[in-house]
Length: 392
Image (cartoon, rainbow, N blue to C red; front, side, top):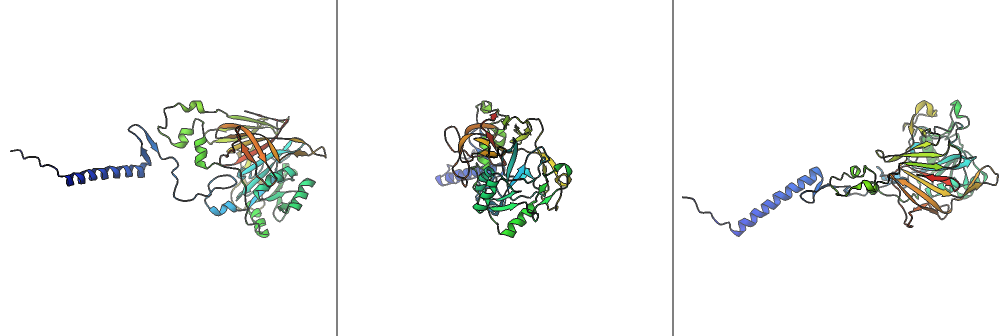
């Protein structure tokens, strides 16, 4: 005889359903915990993109990059006048470590850098050359020690009157290299010497006014090149063909004048999401990358290795520029506004720049007048004269 089926009472049914729901929920939690996935539908599965951890992340005000130690945010900053001539200045040492680099004509069509470092570690940094007033006005918002070897009269007067932290050709913290082809471009310092200078003078912190920056997660989402989907780890984000969104700005030409040795070329590399820098002459801009140890007073040629400069962000500011009263040095307007071109994440944005006073940081705006945030990472800012050109 087949036994009769017993009806399931209401209480048992509730327990059964609750058990099934619990098992399903447990499996779902296990999947999320192990694979980091959200099940959105039967056919679409997204990994978690940039889940924010339950802790505050500290970012560098100089570069926008995350800091392993929050104390590094206020560490001393150094603005180092670095030559770029073909008379022994190249290759520079340690320039790959600078968070922000300003580039402008110093004299006779020859460009020079104001290289801004925070927490430098390079065994050799330099060479070091003279200061110009417009570099000083770009340096000021970074609350840095001005590192230079003399300078123009107006720049030195401004340093003395402005109460700047100042390190000018002091052999307690600098030295002359002995590599013959350097000629007069042989004045160097080290990360250890810079730290010693700050310790000796009580310059223990810097209050950096940096550029507006995106977080790394925001920057990754702003990429529209062919690797954007890979960067975001999106498996099935959309059925739309995103290839038409690729801007395709892979080559940039910044022309300061008629000298091929100083006009700059950048080539975008999608794998590194950076811009490899060369000169119009075809020569890559290589610098000496040096170990993060104190080697004493060394020639970079003896202890460092060459690497090509490749910043994450390239900015071209169009500036009003003319000969100074001595008809040799340059006069550049740093306060005011002008056109700007921002290159980051494989795209180009034409907009404008504005600086209200010497102690105010430069702001960048898009064509609609909205302030722009730069991608994190090393940033080269080139002051291109209005008689020059920006091509891409």
